[in-house]
Image 1: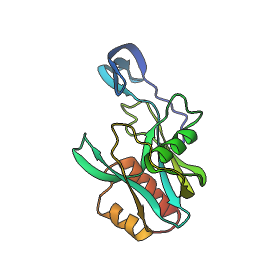
Image 2: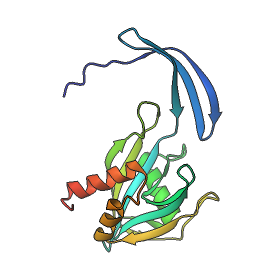
Image 3: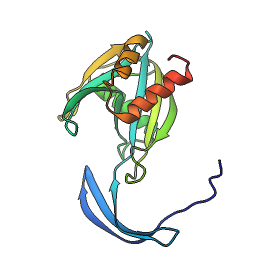
Length: 186
């Protein structure tokens, strides 16, 4: 596919409407290559994120369950979080998040995809990892705002959770489907 036709927009002006830790939003006045202008285009600035599909030495898939206030629901998820400024790389962030949220670590790690929650309005990238042969090495180290339950699922249980739409985070669904499809497990 030819990606040489860069149709980048020109920012004519930009104004921050909010600069809170989890709500940084700006309004851009942009000009498109065809000459059209959008005077109120809103952009949400977030730090980069990570998520990990972790599999134990016993071939159990490590998932977590937690309440998500935006949806008002509790659902299953992969271990995920924010890339902290002090982390040397997204991989370090993913390893830290897995250990903090589940108590699992070590193993073999590889990046399996990068994605964006919404590239039309979000500035961040999500780095997605596969961690195999992880093992329990500590207790959870949760933040005061976290109440996370850890689950170890068989392949069949993972498929059931996926097919019953018990995972609401779309990026996590994409990572699991990619893993299953790549390994011919569906």
